[in-house]
Amino acid sequence: MLSIKKYPFKYRRNKDEKGVKRVVERIIRDVSKRGDDAIVYWTRKFDCPGYKKEDIKVEEFKPRIEPEMEALINNLRKRIEDFAKAQLQGIRKEIKLNSCSQILIPVQRAGIYVPSGKAPLFSSLLMSAVPAKVAGVEEIYIATPPDKENRISPYILFCAKILGIKKIFKVGGAQAIAGMAFGTETIPKVDIIAGAGNKYVQKAKKLLFGTVGIDTIAGPSEIVIIADDYANPEFLAWDLLSQAEHGEDSMAILITSSSNLAKNVKRYVENIISSFPKMEPIKKALKKNGGIILVKDLEEAFSLSNEIAPEHLSLQVKESEKWLNLIKNAGAIFTGDYSPVTIGDYWAGPSHILPTGGTCRFLSLLSVRTFLKEISIISFDREEFLKAMDNVIALSEKEGLFAHAESIRVRGKHERNK
Image: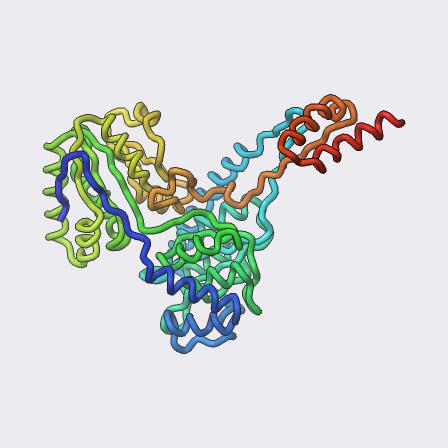
């Protein structure tokens, strides 16, 4: 179930499924041609047999949820908002150099996809929409799939209400992504699509990037734990299981130099799985993409982790902060016994929408920056232009761009003829 292997270890990642790509490409073509009619066809096929065109937009919603959940959700919103505001303050540092400056402008329209298959992920709505609001996005829309009875979660509706989002589209899957990317008779075209989602949603985002902006590629959940003899094996066991719980494609790997710790974690995992019901998806995930890897030392552990480039990297080692400089690739880092990934999923403040599949080598977590465009401003005056003129002409002529050189030279002639 959870085997112990020595490094070097060939870890497995989920392959790019050709069947998924074919289905998503077909849906994208259909939505681009038929708009709302295609939305209805694919929603009936995958989500709700009784779905109609008038169901696409949720006209009014009055969610009723438990008062204690209202308080919890509002507290979570506040934590995410406070962190997003701090992010924005850090980004807004004024830049002025060589008569050039920079401004930050939010995208105008953002579409937030909210999964609702196994469970309504209203926390993901907050993790996506709150940074968009703090960034200053004018129009925020939600797309979320209906259940078989053509309903959507009251928790999602409540989150939309407290965020002031008035347009919700009862659409899921690749058809929702295509609808927001192209625009339909009912769904507005957006500038960027953000949020979690299954492999069909993520494939649609990937294929439509360029037609629309995207936040990141957020596929099956991943955790790599680096631990030493100071770690609590029971904590590690539950941390591995909690990420494997996301689905059988999830990756859960422990890297350690301690064979004693490895044996203890393996024993805890096996005991937990045998003691609790409904563990079959977790067992499948551990068999497919799980493992305990023994390395010679922590330096080798960090080297392997950087190669894997996991979504979540948990450091459960003595004085974990001292090892941060060895980390090159991770979606988010969790340090110490009392910072499990679940804290990041539900409470900490930074968004839990993170790059997966090794893409954190070049992508970052969803944040305020996701919804901002950095635009440079060039403001040379006459004196600065004349100083630069000969250099720019020489450079553009060396590249064979005659008109570029002349656009400079004509201004120089104009100045001489004054």
